[in-house]
Image 1 (cartoon, helix red, strand yellow):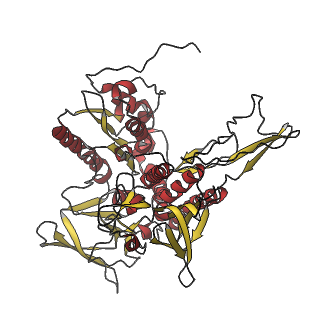
Image 2: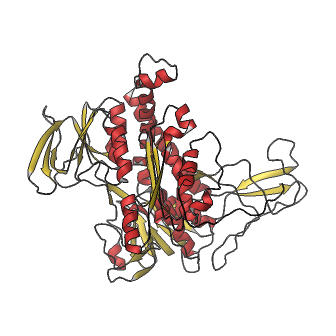
Image 3: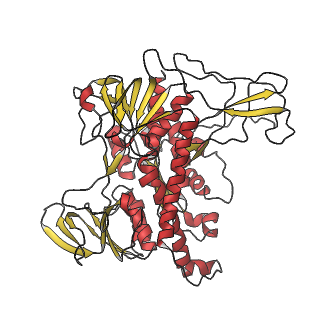
Length: 573
């Protein structure tokens, strides 16, 4: 996501230099100054401090100190001037991570932008998803360290006991969400993005209404519209959620209780992360998985290793190949009752009685009330149909002019950073520059201890693709046990796996299980994005000793028949 603050530098003896955006066919802003931007947690935050100032003269500028001969001031980036006949160039319905990223990039491109939000800025990720869950997982990680006598003993450390305050843990998650939400809100305001409060509905081509229940609606026009309404927890039929003993991830993040025995329905990202949290805080966990194996979305080899480390040694058991056909909340002194049926035959299988149940069966798009019928669009399983450029498709298979959909509501890749990337891609399109996002370059991560991360294809997917398209697939692996930094941290349990084409060095997929896997994956995802081949990335230099050398060894262990070299003639410096 993009955020920027334009800076103007003026001398006491001369008028302040100013920057004005110039609208071209591509709406490219031509600024005398280009501010530095810093990404954080998939978001961007403006940093008022050390900027690289260009476009004036070569004399040094002192940014701090009272003796400066120049005056440094920050001014809000102009929120564009709308196209003739419209209130806005771009209106975004939904202020989650995707909508936020699109809005900031739009302002950077000179578009007059508004964002409509009926709840709070930040959407699912910031308020009920990845942000507060990372706060809980930070606690669970530290609890695991304190509870592992063997781990501490290896460092020569002694800790008498480890405990926690449940409300304090919950407050940590809530405070983090509040802080990030305020950061997002302030970044939008600082750039002049109009935040319109209420439920957004498309009335027709390039026309949207918004408003709160009980109040009159406001109607605005926009040259382009982006739908970014996100998703909500998916609850299968037969499951009664009371928010206390049968809960979704929305409720679990509040950590109102830590039950002795928690059943988790679904063993994907959400279920795995919450199993990490609850077991660290003392709960016993039972997974209920419809497919025949746990962690079905992961590369099978990584999944087996993760099960050996994350499931088997912990107070976790599981039932696979079964559906929870009915779940009844605890009441009148009775426990939560879960009725299981065989996933294939639908015959009754078992009945569980537990203290609480967490429904982690994925998420469903939030697309009701958008007014899609006004633009002749029908959802598919609730998702808004789009093409590879996120342009909305109507029920006749034709593109709806000037309407796009990003993030969870289009179902292409239900990740916050994917939504942001899609939003930025759409803004590029409405500014006249064709851009197609490569979803195979978008990484994903599960923040368990240790972490799991991945980008691209799994090995079975790659082999199927190779068989269909007529190319060979090779696999390279390296262990964290060979990495100095991992061993120094006493965290040698881990594996990195590279799936590639040996004929041309194309990276098809990378999967990592181990310490800080979520951070390590980006070297691979960036390589896929840029089309970097293995034979070229082998020349990259990694600091020693660092965990990044896991990837260094991985790429160097690959055997590629095609050879190309990025090395040019040496330049004296």
